[in-house]
Image 1 (cartoon, one colour):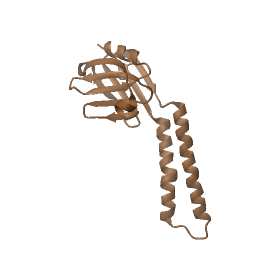
Image 2: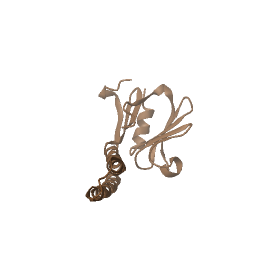
Image 3: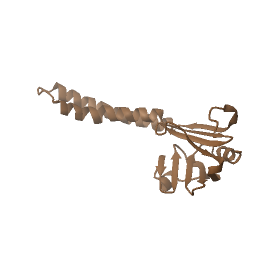
Image 4: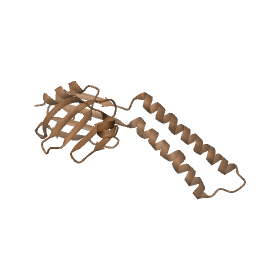
Length: 170
């Protein structure tokens, strides 16, 4: 499997959550941080000396969790490569390294339209006993059946090109 040879790339796509969704999430989390800051200010400005536990209960849910979620939304992406000899994808930052499948491991590949909420409960990494979905946006993707009977759905904004590249692998 030649991941470093760019001459063997048949298909490449990088997807992120839409800018509007990320903006909405960041604004919501900044409001949460603002409320936590206000609560912390009230706690510190009172005449009673705040305890460490009261500061921690304000800081953790109010600053740290929204901050981590903002960072996650900014860096999250689904990267897909089809090389002449393998399919490689990752849902960063949950997959640091790429998941790889050779042509011999794939039995069927076809582009499809699906309902992410009805079929998988939303977007992201969705796992079932025999079916996994990796999608970040939209309702198009490629349904892949593996030799062991498991099925993968990888979301794509270029599903037809992705499917064609998979079927062109040697």
